[in-house]
Image 1 (spheres, rainbow, N blue to C red):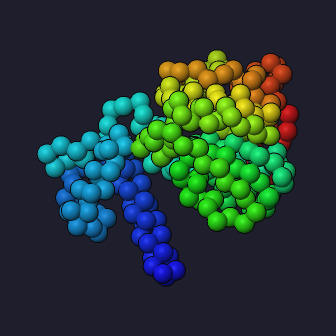
Image 2 (image 1 turned 180 degrees about the vertical axis):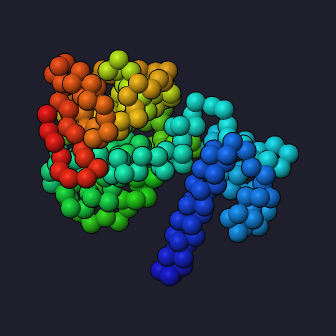
Image 3 (image 1 turned 180 degrees about the horizontal axis):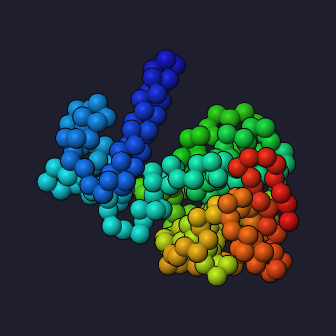
Amino acid sequence: MFQDQIASDSRQFRQLARRQSIAEAVMNEGSVRIEDLAERFGISLMTAHRDLDELVMRGILRKTRGIASAASTSLIESSDVYRSNKQAREKNALAMAAMQYLEPGQAIFLDDSTTVLQMAQHLPSSAPLTVITNSLTLMGELRGVRDLSLIGLGGQYFNWCNAFMGRMTTHEISQLRADTVFMSMSAITDDIVFHQSLEMVDTKRAMLDSAARKILLADHTKFGRRALYALAPLTAFDVVIVDDKTPQADIDRMRAKKINVVIAPTHGSVRGA
């Protein structure tokens, strides 16, 4: 039975990795013939259609007349499949810098962002911890970790981010209190944090309200980008962790507003405010 579980996990990992690669290939090229995708990835045409159907359901791709193409929706950049391959080095640097704000025994909120997901591999070193998350991906990553109490937030499931959100989720969050929340967002404009999804903004706002300390992880690509719904000004966070590619003008402006900016280098040691 144990060997069967290992084999099943391995298949799921290969399937996820293949679907991520397919999504990235189609996004990079705009549109690709489904037969060409099957040949390129060494899979049957039926498997290619199955993979694409999952990506279509998640709002990432479209499939018409034998052609797979990128979906023209603002949620593409919010999709966990899309986000997981972007700024990987920077996200890991941010996650490493965030670990200095963790102490054994704490209760923490971790949001569904792929940046915060990078913290999962480092959490065992700070155990015991209580981790509260709405991310199904994080729940899978952290299951079975020794000395880690995992609280999974339920609610309405959203395919595109592989997470639970909505009224039930925010209600559950409101009944909890955590020492720290770690989160990331998709856009920062005029030193205000934004996201494309109203449900996600509501969920993250509930986490902010229920945590004593608030930490934002934001790579340099988030500055100057635009999204529809505002979450909070940067001044609402106790710490804003950015990578070393963030323009100096942005860093100077934030510090002039008394925002506690920490610079996470892609190489070397963390620089504080």
